Length: 236
Image 1 (cartoon, rainbow, N blue to C red):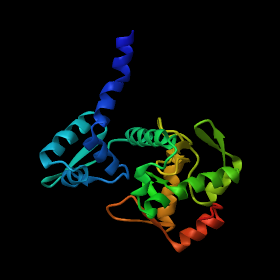
Image 2: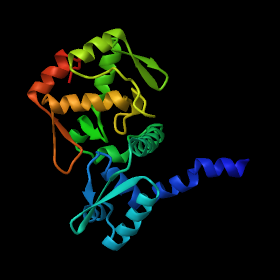
Image 3: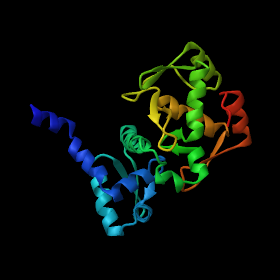
Image 4: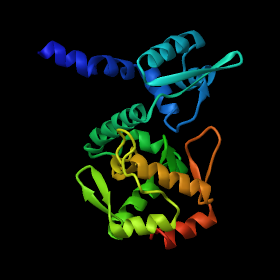
C-alpha cells in the first residue's frame, strides 16, 4: 500500500527536480510566465551551456517546463499553472520558515525596493502592492476568507463586473478561483488563482501598470496610483 501511494504521489521525483540550486534558479527565473532561451537560463543559473542543457532536459521530462524550438534556439517556459503554483508555494514555504527567525532574511537586503513593491509572479501580481490589494478587497467585502481560499461576495461580483472582469465561472479546470498565496518578500498573503490572473490582466490592459523587459518588476503608472486608490481603496 505504501509503495503504491509513493508511486502515485511521486513526491521524491518532483522534490529531486527542484532540489538542485541551478534548476531552482532556472525555474524561478521563469516564474514571471515568460519564455526564455537556454543561454539566458544558463547565465541566470551560473552554469555552462552543456550543464544547463542537461538540467533543462530533466525539467522538461519532469513536467515542470515546456520547450519550443525557434530557429536554431530552444526556448523554455513554465509548463502549467499547477507547475507555477508548486514553484511559488515552495518559495513561499521557504520564506515562511525564514520568517520565524528573529533577524530579517539576508535575501531581502539584496532586493531592490521596486521588486519588493510590485512585481509579477507567474500570472498574478506580487509584492507589497499585491498584499495591499487583497487586504483592501477583504476590508471592502469584495471577498470573504474561506481558509486558504476566498469567495466572491455579491458586492464583489458587482464591482468586478464594472471593471469588465468576467466572473461567470469561478473555477476553470482544476485551478482555484481565488487562492491565498504567502508573498515571498512580504510574508503576508496576496491573491493568486483565476481572480489574481484576471486582475493582473486588468492592470496591464487599462494601463495601471507597465511591465519591464527581462524582469518581473512592474511600474505603477500615475493612472494606476489613482485607480488603486479610488477603485480598490489601496493606499500606496
